[in-house]
Length: 249
Image (cartoon, rainbow, N blue to C red; front, side, top):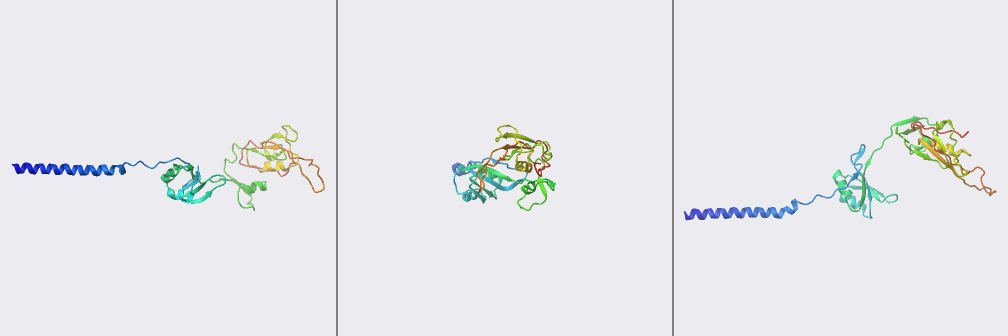
């Protein structure tokens, strides 16, 4: 009987020791198991239509090693920006990595890159300028390609020699702006250049202020008699077909 009781006490002691040991392991490991997740910031344009997977523009709040910063969060530096903005573009980042990068103290903003497409074409536009502005090549392709909503809600101000707003190619979309030459609100074109420039603008509405300028030649110091003029908006209709006047006459 005594031996049986002693054996039971030994078993109970061993059981308590084993539980305590297990508890000790749990206590020791709990600080690692309960670690707070890494901070995440906001990524602008994430998941938007046309978003480029893994590709981001990063704007910085302070000076830092850009290559090391991109690498720290799992990305690769692609381009370094130091003029208009302080930042860089990076690729190879997952959505979570981009959010973690956005939370870095040195980062001001992270924006996901996005593809933009154009979906309409005007054949044989009447202006060389319109043919030229939709492409990198200087030769032109006799086409003006643009999105269906091109220029919607935009007013273009052309500071030049004025605009002949009655020209048929403006289709009633042009209006006068301030005339700094005559100090009034009628900025008729006294030269022709302003009308041409306003015609190249694809905006639905174009405003061209008239301003004075002077010119000198080798044999004369007389001011030019036909100063540039400032005319006004050239459009409020649909921007889908853009016309440029061949001449102001």
